[in-house]
Length: 500
Image 1 (tube, rainbow, N blue to C red):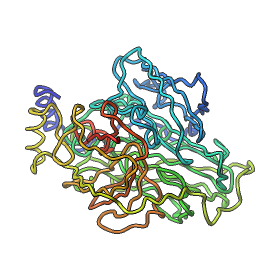
Image 2: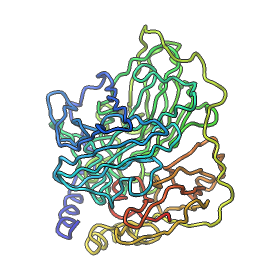
Image 3: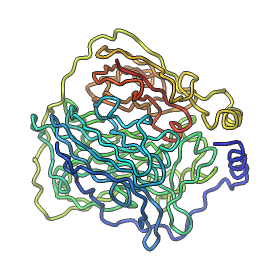
Image 4: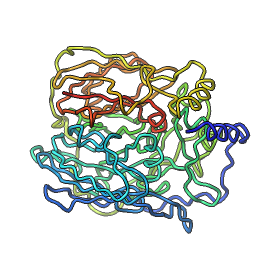
């Protein structure tokens, strides 16, 4: 961002009203939930994704400009089988560089799809991916430095399911019947009903927060499920917003998997928090046939817990959800109705789950990371750095991301303890190339088995993770560690490392 752009942005922000004005003709919720089409990715050729520009009617009769992988918004669900090598052809049909990052997948750096692997219009990237990952729900998205937030917001993202043929998972698994992916995103729309992405000062500081909730690309849709146990694969696909999921009747549900795969046993709960890019699989019992809604308290992210200023426009209020209720009321995510159809899944949850057992042992070294601004005064830092550092206003350990600099050289196969903290803010911290165990969060010890294997951890206070890298990454295709508030990532809160 150049000096003239910043001054124009600042003037507009300071002149903007401080209250978000709701659009009178808000989008109509309640359409059936779109269930992503499945691409079964096999070992041969023919597995093709094309990044395209398109349009989509989020609001009836109004078309918004979008991006997508092989479709108008988002991409197909990619289904991989552990033990295979999957060849993908990803073609760029848009007018800007893209990547395809296989978020959470354990692959070497030259296959990971990070910023160093961006490819231009008309080019095709053809990685051969060795699928060496436990059964899990993963994510894929473009990861071009400085453009990730915009490209993901407009639709360059999708879901991955990895199946393990060597284990029998005693959970609902009839896709589209009792096993559903839910990509939850917040998006903003203008007065005409077109999706917009207008970045203001507070959006850069806290991450962009939209005015509508989408699930699989539909505004607050409805899902019809059979009576009985239903598996929901929740993905926080928002740029920045954090969700505190619960059901309107307060019902109990069970978490059965985290970012990296299955838990050792179902965990009973009535609420679940997911920061940006976190995933969780939950099983909900609809035997009572009661209609119910999935909601979220109005979670924020960014400075001081996200509650200081909102992000609907330049400096607008963060509660202005169209049809989402008054400020402070729960956000409507998804409504459920019960069908008369028979549920083909199991009648009850097992007491234990076939989670992978990996003993990382004691760490041989410790590393410290602080996610920070470049100066203590936020507005001064923003002014000085946007003008002087070409938009790199954030960093890790006081260093903004530099594609030409390797920040860490991590030995292959050695266990490390990473200690992460943040200045003034809370951040979802993501590490490429591995899954890790969280051993301390917000200054408190935690049971890694209860949380499960992770690749994103919500950092609000001192946080410690135990990890080991079994996949290699060279200097020309390193792994990343970064905040997964995409606006923070784009303005420098990212580092890169080799594994040799």
